[in-house]
Image 1 (cartoon, rainbow, N blue to C red):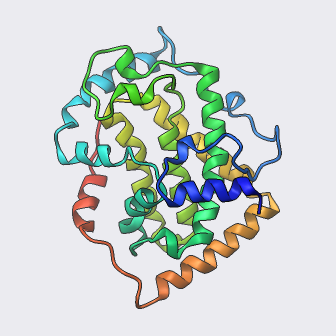
Image 2: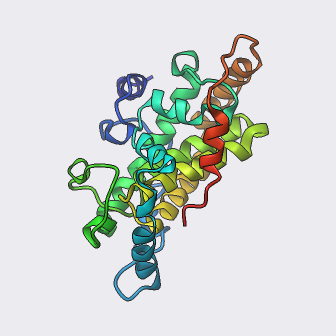
Image 3: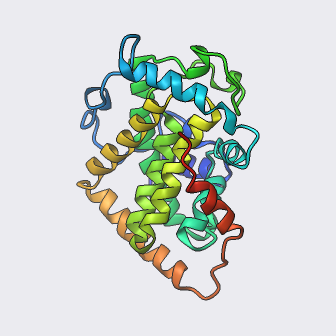
Length: 258
């Protein structure tokens, strides 16, 4: 394994946000094989109905802050491995411990880095302003933390949807709750007020397109098979701990934010 792989996985394991792991992290895709700037629809601009819809949604969702759903959105700001494992534990049906699932974490780390490289490139290409830069409104994340980062597509959504589609593949009997949680994770960025809804949709497309391209790569297939065997064994173990407060989380995931 390349040294950069160890750097990326170590960063993920200790909770360093995956979105800021070094640019030289490994990828499953050959250079130039995927260009999301040519796949995503253009970012909304003034005069586009999507632009006005984004503005309405931002204003209409400010009321969620200060509620339990707003609290979930604040927790979903965290992108490190332990936080993401916690976020998806209820949907998976076991308390996912990154230290006990290194092959699964490797797959998600490299897959996530691959997808987020596409997200970063698209952000810099479209240069769409974030909603609070267009209209006034509360956010659950300090704008200073996002300085220099554009809106479209959402990197958090790309990351969360990557987790969701990979885990749904590894545990297909839990696909519905896993993908529900992935959808809610992206929508947390709208609740938080730091992304437009169009950026959430674009983040899901970015993650899904990257995953589709990765499926044809032998290294990805080998890592996917290894992770599936590992997670299957973990889920079958009587000693696997169960997550807590899952009913309350399910109620929040089921909320329609719009």
